[in-house]
Amino acid sequence: MDEKELALLLTRNGIISQRSDSEGYTEANADEKIRNAGNASVANSLEFLGKHQIVVDVQPTFGSSGIGFTYRINPKLVNELKDDESISKAVFNLFEPQDETSQTIAELIDKCLDKEINNTYKDDFIASLKELKICFNNKCFIACLSLSGKILEICLKQLLIDNKVQFEDRFMIGQLLNKIKESRIEKYLDQSLLEVAAIINKSRIPAVHAKEKIPVPSREQAAMVIHGVVDTINRIILNP
Image (cartoon, one colour):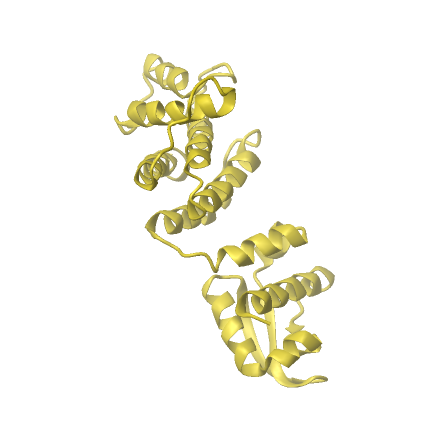
């Protein structure tokens, strides 16, 4: 069993256990596959999961399966990771190479989970941020721009909602920015957002409508757009 498989098994077993007993601990070596991996590998895996806030407590134990460890999964994740697919995705993402941009997105997701966002958009907003991280890590830069546009639209709509300004739900980035300007909302937004919107649309519109050749964005273009979106999220969602 490799490191990724061991981390997945520990996480899955812990979540299943805590769904039955929310205050209980999971005995790692109760699973034969985990026991066969050896306590040294289990200890390293639990430490790794702890650094990523998946495991929140580890205790040594001498239980029915001998000397080993018991542990608890972050209760928030027990509720959030509802099926095998979401558990696998959360664990496997930890093993992807992380650069500044993907790390920024990961930190942003954690912060946004605890913030008040209009119920109409919140689930879509969080899911889009998670997909954005996956797409960037896997060099799917056209998808990154499309998702960035969607996230930016939600941010701008949230700003209009916060200021009780009516708008049409079909409005796209440019129309939303014009509405914000017309409404004289006293909120500083990066002046480069129109340029960011133009880059997004050059890739987004052909990708959806297949009317012309899609200009493939570079990693640097995708990162620039993402950081522009992150700045907008910080100003509108995290620090309204």
